[in-house]
Image 1 (cartoon, one colour):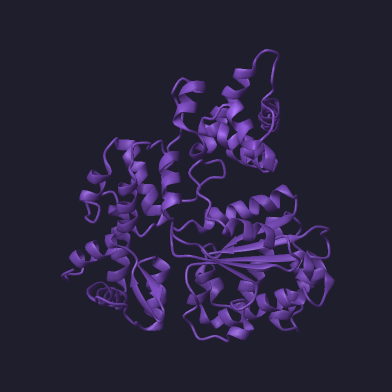
Image 2 (spheres, rainbow, N blue to C red):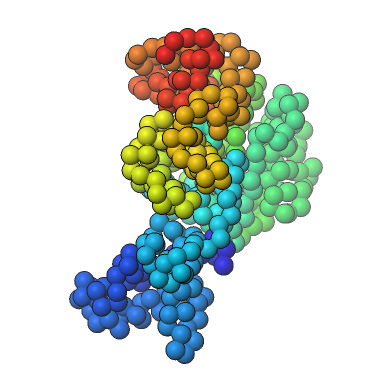
Length: 440
């Protein structure tokens, strides 16, 4: 069973199944659980057996313990935070199932045990995407897990056998962004390719009509007309359009029209949109002719203490203390990528957190590539470097020019505080104070 199959099965558990499983994995006996729930112990055994059946674990005659062995092994692999080490020792001989240690760079695969949910944003989006004409905006700085989260929303869509089209604005050539007609034709063709339906754009594109009207007609008279189920269009790296003011407002207009038509024309209720971006637009535009003040905005937060503790357990770091976790959060600001990279190296090199943090803010530490990448950004664009210098040398929130503030926020180097910004974490303060030639 892979992670996706495990999650699907887990959702089928009833509240009573879970009420029996939780104390079982904590180490309580059937009798103790039964007394707590004021039921007979046979009822608890039935709930655990039912859970095993949901997970595809068949109970052979006189193999009660083997059935539970398999259940413990599954949860130890995909929900290790649920399982007391004593239960692992009892049922698995003290060993965790073999764990593949994925590098934190890139998207967290659907079957990875290292994806950490951040309630309630998953539930909000899973429910919202079911609504006719939905528009979801997912906003967070780089490497916060936006694309991994998007993949999980789209996986829910796929499970319901709905249509979906995953677009990424890093893909088109620059010349496409310089011309509205080329861009919208790319948009229309890309959607049909992703849906695996025929491209009939030539039949619906009328040179005598406005470009946006042609795009809208193509969706209304063809794309949405030929399908009998909802269509979800996701646009990752949506903030790339901010770099193209010539076409940005027109595309904003079009997406706003698509969304508002769901309240006017039944066929548009089939369409749901997901926009994924790192920062608010820093270009001049009409907010009332855009998707930025409609739909549902989900801002992905940093990891909190419980989530970091959960991730540590999933890495098998049973010895890490609460104080060490707090220290790591304080140093990284709870940034998911920075936290996970630290745990990756703790496991890979079998070293202590103290050893990791000792030179973490230098170019010989574990964050070397990450820090150098950001330094190159700040040196390539001197106005950003100067803005960052202001932020790390101040002892209070700093008001920056709108464009610089939004760009630094999109990189994750600063976080907003009212109309001003603060450094995201100590790691960046220590590193950039040294590399930009200032005193902390």
